[in-house]
Image 1: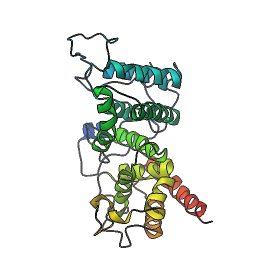
Image 2 (image 1 turned 180 degrees about the horizontal axis):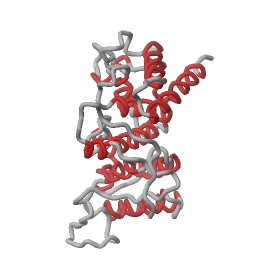
Image 3 (image 1 turned 60 degrees about the vertical axis):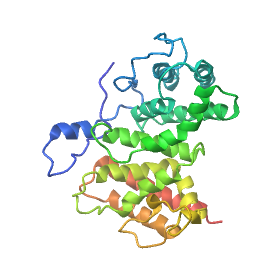
Amino acid sequence: MPEPKPATEPKSISESESSTALADELFRPYPQEDEYVQFTLDEGVEVLVFKDGSTDLNNGYSDKRVVLTLQKYIHGKITLDEATRTMLDFVPKGNGSGSFGGCMMQVAGQIPYTHRLGHARLVQLLRNVYYFLGSASLNQFGIEIYENFEPDLETEYNDRPTPADPYCQTLNLGCFFAQLSQNGLFNMATEGIRTMRRLEQTEFDDGAYRYTDCYVSLAALWIIFAGQSLYTAVVEAYDPRLSPGGQKQNALHDPGPLYKGPISGKERWAFWRDALKAAAERENGSDESRRLAKNAAEVMDVIERSFQF
């Protein structure tokens, strides 16, 4: 298999950090869209032990069976219907061990956000499987998958890269979450607002903040892939119970220190757009983050105009 080619030259973490090994780990290059992505599982997940003591991959559910199926489906070796039937076949035989939600997250984090077809296929498959699980008569294993999947996603979402969850994986997962939100599969408004809120906390012109490139890129991807649903959540249909003093106030929705306007409305949308425009002009920003910020700001203009009727 050929070595992946970097999509862009990654930027170092900070001028003050001397650990180039850590920088290389955090800022891995992306495979190109036409390259084959070989999915892997975290250490320990490969060992499959079922309740009856067997390790037969044909005996019920396992994370590895899920990954092998996704491997074939993402790369077009099997159809959406075939992949859906295979996934659903795991559920009635739910005597295995593993976490379906966590497994899907691992795979999503390994699909480059530039691999648009891969993410689109994963979202389509998840929609098919999840809707079936919500309407079918299931055993306890299937019920647990259905009831735990959205909480598992919310728990796993991370907008701060670490050596364990590097820069590229953070962006890949952000792209995945944004598409889940835009497709209405799950209500991910809080994750989207939480990500955009980073634009209200970071001064783009000082070059001192360690993860500015990642935060800018992640916010831009949310706009590019889920801008319409974010606009609706923040401007058109914001739940007043989430506002300060409301019955269900969510601190993640509160504005950051750089933004002084209302928690919802066009003012906040305009602030995000202006912040992305400023990020697109940052001299010390990576080519990738500046390009994404520019594209996202243009998308925001289009979305706002499209709601003026």
